[in-house]
Amino acid sequence: MSKRIPIVVANWKLNGGIDLLCASVAAFIGKHFSTKIAICPPYIYMRDMLNFLQHSEIIVGSQNVSKFGSGAYTGETSAQMLKDVGAGLCLIGHSERRQMFNENDGSCQIKVNQALASDLMPVLCIGENAQQREAGITNDVLFRQMHDALADTDITNKEICIAYEPVWAIGTGQAASPEDAQAVHGFIRQELCVIYGVERAEKIHILYGGSVNKSNARELMNQEDIDGLLVGGASLDPNHFIEICKQAEIVAEEIEG
Ligand SMILES: O=C(CO)COP(=O)(O)O
Image 1 (cartoon, rainbow, N blue to C red):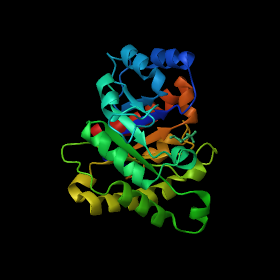
Image 2: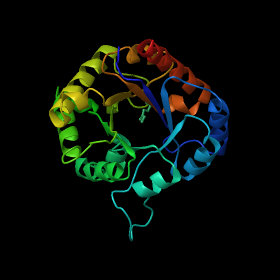
Image 3: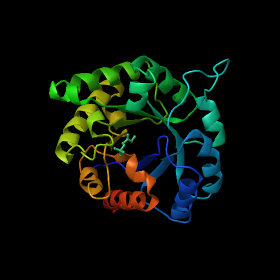
Image 4: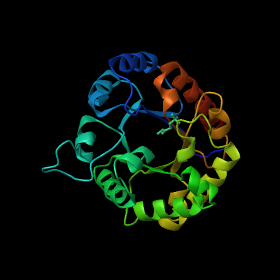
């Protein structure tokens, strides 16, 4: 079982609206969880969510961040702006952004540094696709994604998080088995030790994402190096998402207990 207090993150992607925002606020307001919970709605709803949830423990995060700090970059939102409105984390390099918006390890590296500079926790998303998995090069892919995106990052007194999201598991209903996911998370931890040293790497949360639901959350969370979950589709139903959070909470209580 993980040694780190779990973090459960909802990624709404380009879904939801005022209805989902209200339903989520209603579901979470006034509730205490012994695990950290974050919700990443589309940018446009972040501010409302932060206002509604200001007295709660829920962290509001973004799904992306600009690689630029300021200037003539139409349509962009900087890490500092996100920090200013109260965001606690930002996803970086989600596979959908890599596939459809030309993100690559180089842009992820810049974004990770932007987030760190603004004290916004970067959640670097990495993962192999089905072909790479079949070719047996999962670790090679992850090695490159991590070493390139985390090159020259100074995390002294900062927080960073890695999310392993196998592309073939996203939105397919076919999550990685807990054993397979643990094997990959173990490899990620090993590389974090190389990059940041053992003591620091042991404290970094490695989240799993890809078809997480209330039925598989507990078993995934029971793995030693799975420290949290990044949930897409199942987070669009606040009650389902709460069930997932409760599964993670059981693990959190066992750690604290
Ligand atoms: O991409 C994901 C979260 O970032 C995972 O999505 P699903 O949970 O819908 O598979």
